[in-house]
Amino acid sequence: MTRELVIHDPATGDEVGRVPVTPVSAIPAIVARARAAQTAWGAAGLEARRDALLPAGEALVRESERIGHLLTREMGKPLKQAIGEVKHCGASLGETLAEIVAALSPERIEDAKTVSELVFDPFGVCAAITPWNFPVSMPHWTVVPALMAGNAVVLKPSEKTPLVAAEYARILAAHLPPDVLQVVHGDEAQGKALVDAEVSLIAFTGSREAGRQILAAAGKELKRVILELGGKDPLVVLDDADLEAAADFAAMNAFRNSGQVCVSTERIYVAEPVAERFEALLSTRTAAIRVGSGLDEGTQVGPVVDSGQRDKILRQIDRAVRGGARVVAGGKGHHGNFVMPTVLANVTRDMPIQREETFGPVVTIERVKDDEAAIAAANDTPYGLGAAVFGKDLARAERVARRLTAGMVGINKGCGGAAGTPWVGARQSGYGYHSGRDGHRQFAQVRVVSRSR
Image (cartoon, rainbow, N blue to C red; front, side):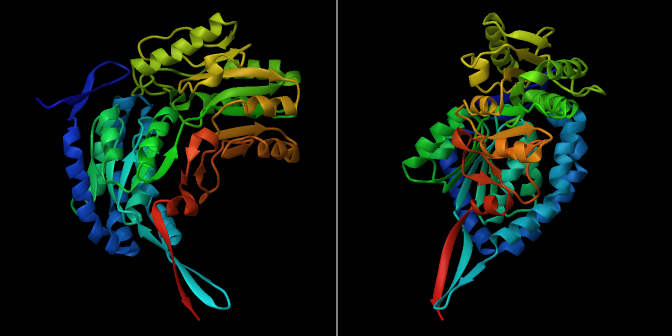
C-alpha cells in the first residue's frame, strides 16, 4: 500500500489534501533520470534556459490566488501574504533571470602575458531540500538559480507543505524538458536518500541540526553544499533610538508569519534608560495584533504550522516563566495551533528560550547597561544569520552593527540588503550563501580557461 502525506489545515484541522510518499528505493532512479536529462539542458546555454523559464513567471502570477489559497490552508499564513508570496515570485522572475544571466556570463581577466576567462558550468544534479515556512519562495530561490546554471534539479519540499510545492514545481516543469525538474515527497528518510544519491550539489534550507547531518553525509564524497540554517536574531535598541520605530519593527519582525521566519527577531537588547518605555510600546503593539485563521479578513497572525511546532514553542514559554521570566504581553489565550504573540522580559541567558531557535511568535527583552554589554549579549549564541540595530547616531549604530557576528545586519531596518546583495549566514547559520551575483555563482562550477597572448 502506498504511503501518503496527509495535510491538515492548521487553523481548523480539516484535511487539505494528500500526496504519495516517494519510496526511498525509487530515488536513485529519479536522480539517474535527472542526470540523463541534464546533459542537453546544460548544453542549451544561458539564454535558452532563460527563455524556457521566463513564461513560468506569468503562469505563477496568473495562478497566484488559487495557489495562495492552498498555501494558507496548508501552513496557515494570512491569505494576502500567501497570495503575495506566489505573485512576487512570478512577477519578479524576469528580473531574477536577467540577474542570473549577468552573474553566470563569462568574465574576462587578463594581464600582460595571459588572457583568462571565468566560465560557469553546471555541477550536474542539484538536490534542493526546502522548508515549509515560505513554501513557494524557498524552492524558488534554490530551484531557479540551480536550473539557470544548467543543473537538473530534484526538489524535496517539506513534508508539511508538499501540496503547494508540487504546484510550484508543476508550473516550472511545464516549461522544461522532461526530468530536468522532478519532485520527491517524504520526510527525513527521503531527504537522507536524496543526499546519499548521485547528486553533485545539495542546497538545503532548514534547521542547524539537519544541516549538520547533511554536511557530514556530503563530506564522504566532498559534494558541494549550500546551507541556509536557523537563526536566533537579535535586535539592539540603543539609548538614542527612535523607540516608536524600533517597537514597530520589533512587533512586525518578531510576529510576522507567526514568527516562523529564519530572520525573525527573537531576542531584544535594549539600553536601560529607555527600556521601560520600549517595553510599553511593544506591549501595546503586540496586544493589538489580530490572530485568527489566515482565511479570515483582517488576520495579521495565523496559526503555527502544526501541533508539534506549537508544543515546542509553548514549552519554551512555560520554562521561561517558571524560571522567572515576566510576561510583558501575550503569554495566555493559546488554543489549537494558535500561539498568541508573546513578549517576555527578565529572561536569563541560560534559559532555552534565549539559546534555542524558537521559530514562533515569541520575543524576549533583556536590559543592557551600554553598547558593549549589548554587543556581548547579542553575540552570545552559536547562530549568526541576521541582526538589527536601532539608533539615531548612524556612525555609532554602524560601529555596533559591524561588531555583531551576523551575516546580515540592518540599521534602523530589517537585515535584508539592496537588490543584488546575497543572503548570507555567519557562524552556524550558514555554509555558503545564495542570491545576488555571488550567491548565484555558487550553483555553478567556476572554471578558469586561459591562453597566452
